[in-house]
Amino acid sequence: MAGDSVFLALNNIDKFQLWSMLFLTLARIDSSAAVEIDFVTLANLPPLVRESFENSPQAKRYAFSAHINPFYLHGDFDGDGQLDTAVWITERATGKSGIAIFHAKANRLVIVGAGRDLGNAGDNFSGLDAWHVFRRGPVQRGADGKPPPKLRGDALMVMKTESASGLIYWDGNRYGWYQQGD
Image (cartoon, rainbow, N blue to C red; front, side):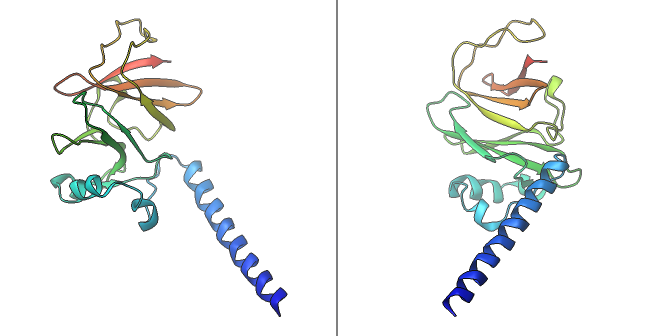
């Protein structure tokens, strides 16, 4: 009898793992599709960031997205000495992907992409599949040969792996795009 319950438990775990792998596979097949964030995943987001977003006017237009894992990053993006948080979002009406950046000290959300144009990056980041924090410091000259920006804070390095990359950085007034790889 004990063997039967162990088999049943393993059988249930296998089914759960199978469904999880299937979900993740389907989400990867169409990387432009918005991936809803479940309750458990959302619970990993710092409460102050989640509450600020949910109480903002942007919450009606945008939803959190698990488009890329991890779906949020911390860095001092505006250079004010406080840790800020960048979170993947999707514009509800169009399905366009982008990033909501929560400036902690100013208690303000700034949206890039997701229907809002960011220069050469466009207004839809659904083609991107990786990102990380690029710590404040010198930036190498990019693919287009233009002079690199002088970073005021950390930046976001966003990528379409094996294709292109760019930096999303704060210039003191708004976010800009600097093409890194082509």
